[in-house]
Length: 148
Image (cartoon, rainbow, N blue to C red):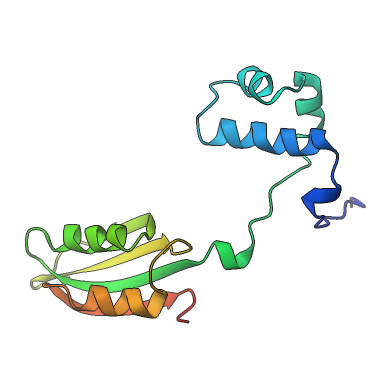
């Protein structure tokens, strides 16, 4: 068994190299750098420093800034209904993460949509009310996340 401990530390007290490794990891994960070497060059660190720390340092996303909500919807099986739901979420600045739709049965389809609403104009309850008012939305429930 390892004696490894995880701790949360303010970035203000971390050595600059740790912050640059985090930045390089992010460049790699979002595809802005095609290789580790390119990411290291971009942030100004050596590859040896990157490889020394990359598996030991991770960014901590504050729970309040990464509010993920999952809706369970029953939608009419009509052209454009799911599209209107996704468009409304986009208009409200919600970042859609996953969409799962079952095959329609008896004229309706069950759909789950997970999204991050940190930049959204409304809270999850407000977004739910907006989506519920769309044509073709039969039912909508929040099955995960904060109602606030």
